[in-house]
Image 1: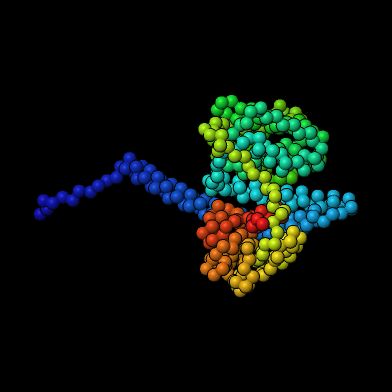
Image 2: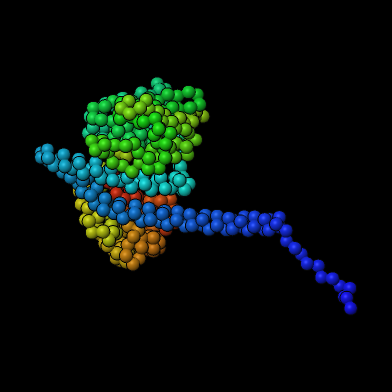
Length: 409
């Protein structure tokens, strides 16, 4: 007897198989892509953590060296050799500091972690500060530097520190890649809407195939042993990123090897509505007359803890030194410091916790808390502010910066 019920069997065609295979490929690609993206994010995070730690570890030993050089400069000497040697140490500490800063800055810029603090900046003031910063390198390499500025005052809406950094890096780059006795020109032009900076040198120049890639990370021109200049190939990448963050553009030109280079920076011009609000950068002057402040230094690095008191006692400050957080909390209520120079990376109780506890001690609410640390990223500055610090100084710190946080007479 034949059943009236017939079972229907689905037969997959080749088109069905192809479709299912395509779906599987898409899903597999999506899963694989997600895994790759997650791995890239994790690698990026690990890289950032490594760079932050590297910056901290490199800045720590630079601090006592910088302090020692500052002390050597304060001691009058007739020995020309000592003067030359201290100058060498000073320049090389500055070079090492620049390498560390460039490495960390490029990482922050590429990850969008840099925040500009814009204000009205006079172009002439920024140029003056930048040229002063690079003057030692210019003189050492026996270059002639000429600066041409517009006759009238020109203003920009910019982060003054970063704008100086842009000009400084371009000048330093020109000085390094121009043989001794070269000529470097900085020419600024202004229209109603734009400011253009031309940085021109008669240095080693660039081959045509290098010019389009000169702003990429770690890109450097080939150098023979006689032109071994050093550096990480990060300076121009950093400058390019900062210029773009200011709403500007940047261009590189060269007629070829041995024919010099030109870098052009274009930035939006600011026309202030009220001249009363125009303000140039303040020079760090007049701090040497700060006397008789009580300063508590908290740092577990013995060399740093020795160098800072020597500097401060030279200008008449009263100093106490401790190496642990708990020791700082024990000494502070009795010493009643005007300023506490406090490291973050202390053993046991870190500087953040020390600052929080110190803010709760009677008689210390008005004490200025200053962190001096190798950690200088945005999140580090934010955390120090949350902990109650008034200032965040990044190692290596020179004497001018230390004196600058002390109270006035």
